[in-house]
Structures are given as structure tokens and as C-alpha cells.
Amino acid sequence: MKFAIVVNVSREIALELSRALAAWLDERGISYIFETRSAEKLGILTSAPIEELNRQCDAFISLGGDGTLLITSHSAMTKPVIGINVGYLGFLTEFTRDEMFPAIERVLNGTYSIHNRSQLEASIQQGNGMPPFRALNDVVIEKGAYPRIPTFVIKLDGELLSSYRADGIIIATSTGSTAYSMSAGGPIIAPKSSVFVITPICPHMLTVRPIVISDEKKIEVSVDAPDGEFPLNCDGQLVRMLNPQEIVTVRKSPEAIHLVANEKRDYCEILRSKLLWGREHNSDQ
Image 1 (cartoon, rainbow, N blue to C red):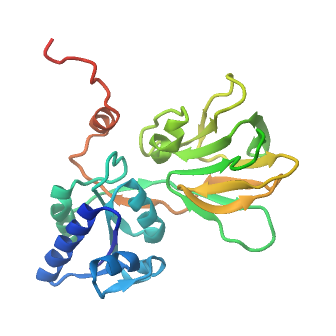
Image 2: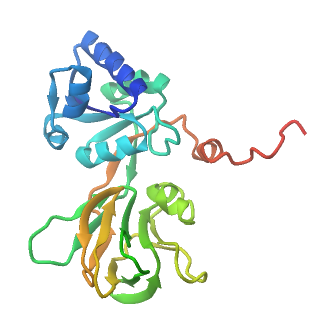
Image 3: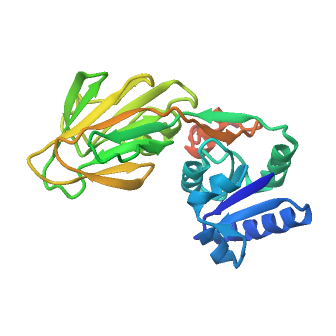
């Protein structure tokens, strides 16, 4: 088995951990290759551009936070991903630093289990053959630098849902419900729920609320404005500036992301610890 390793090079603790990981793999004669930027920062020669790692490797190791895992998952496609958390919240990264080597050993032994996470697929109706964009967390269309409040027109399976005046629209998976959508007032959805959530960003009317829909729905979004350009972001990365009236179609991707599962991890405990739920309650009373 050969591992692809992607590191958050802005965190010294991630770099230290990756050096220990490389030494551990070398001792056992296990093949690995680092993503180019990670290798350059570490002074390691075995490297490849992140876009090529999927063709060369059998599994991925992400050393960083949820952002690093999102970048890794886009390159991994259907290959298993071991997420090691050296960040803060860590909703997606399944393992702590202390759990890294046991997790890798389980993958090597074939005794691991997988969390299959649905992705979004966004495409733009135009004739240039542009491939669809994929997102594990969310697809977001925002007003950007547009000086007024635009109108976002949303259709479900061809039927008009509504026209929202807002700063933007977030379409999130259940996995992404604890990311930008939650910050914008969207609900927390249990992982692997077969739903999407559409969350308006700062809507003009207080009666506009997030809506949870089946992940079998086809969502069409366009911006009704006389001029301007509007950022289309997938998992926080700008993929294109949209023109007014351009239609973005968002649906469930046929390809899921395969995250190596930490069977000791309790999702309810994660919510309590990461979101500080119950801290106002004194358990001694």
C-alpha cells in the first residue's frame, strides 16, 4: 500500500507530526509520497502535485484541520482518507495526533471501517464543456462586492421555491451543516443524513429561513441583478465568478468521499466539546 500525505504547512505542529510519520513509515518499509508544497516545506524529495496523488496512491493521510481534509478529499476522490486533527474544531478529522499510528495500522491490516459522506456537484449551464465542481461541505453563491442586495432565485426540480433578497445562498450537505451554514443560522444535521440544507445569508426578510430538503432534489440557483459578478465557492474555494441570470445546478454527486472512521468517536460528545454545549451547567450540583 502507498500513502499520499497532505500537510497544513502553516502549522508547525503539523510539520513536526509529518516528520514523525515519515520516519515511522520508513522504519516499516511502507511507501508514501508527499504533496508538493508539503514536501518542499519538509525538505523531502518524494513528492507529486496534489492533482496526481490519486493515480499514484491507495490511501490518503491529511495532517491539519478540516480545511486540509477538504482539500485532501477533493484529490482522494473515492480513496480512503485518514484525517488527523491538529486544528481546533475538527468536525471532519476523525483522529487525534495520539491516534494517528494505530489508525494507519488498521488501514494497513484492512481492519478499518469507512464513513461514506455525500458530496454536492455544481454545474453551470453553458456550452464550453466545463466539468462540474464538487464540494463535500457546501456550495455558496454570494453577492461579493456587488453594492446592492441581489435576488437569488431558487428552483427545486424545476419548480420555483422562492426568490430571496440576501447576501448569498449556502447549499450544504449534512457533513457541511456544521460549517458556514451553521454560522449563518442553519441547523445541525446528523452525518450521513440523506438531506441538503439551503441557508440564506443575511436575508432581507426575517421570515426567510433555512430549509432542509431531500438530497435527491435538483437545485437551480441564479442571481437576478442588472449587472455585477457573483462569487461561486465550493468548500470555501472560489471556482468562478457568475454573471446575472446564469444558472447553477446543484445535485448529489455520484461519487462519495470515504473517510476512515474512528469507532471510538461519539458524535454527540463532539458537539458538546466543540460547541461548548452544557458548559453553563455545573455537574457538581
